[in-house]
Image 1 (cartoon, helix red, strand yellow):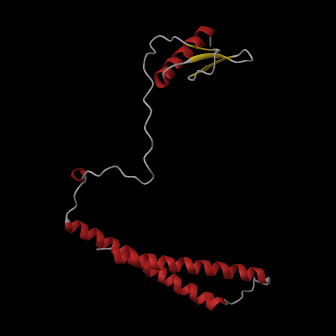
Image 2 (tube, one colour):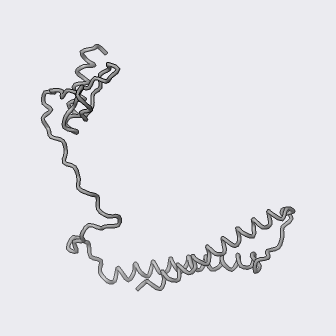
Image 3 (cartoon, one colour):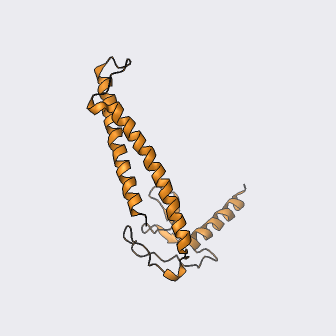
Amino acid sequence: MTMSLKLSALLALLALATAAHGQIYKCVTPGGSKELTDIKRGPHCELMDLPGATIAAPARRGAPSPRGAQPPATPGAFPRVDSAEQKARDADRRAILEEELKAETQKLAELRREFNGGAPERRGDERNYAKYQERTAGLRDSLSRTEKNVDALKREIANIR
């Protein structure tokens, strides 16, 4: 690239940056190098006069809304679902949840059988007692998690209309 082509490309970029940020300053650092920025960083910065760059900077937003805040609902804008379709959706949801509950209940029964009241049978690959304890702790965690899943699924099914 030639020097004039680089300079024109730089000016075009600066014009775009000015449109987005408002003003561009050319600053001279204490080391003597030149720096282009949108923030005036001291007395060694001068505002650049770029042709066609008269667009003001975008207005700053206000404070962000609190976490979890929802925009106000507009009931007229929401699509309506007739009651027959909603009942069909609820029936499908119930069937899916009941299938999941059945699978989780079977898994819970298998885990309880394997856990054997806190004393599962030792396997041949568990010559080291630490491995046995590690597997027992894993079974206890899986058992607890599966019990929570079963309870959650039962609550969800009870909440369906």
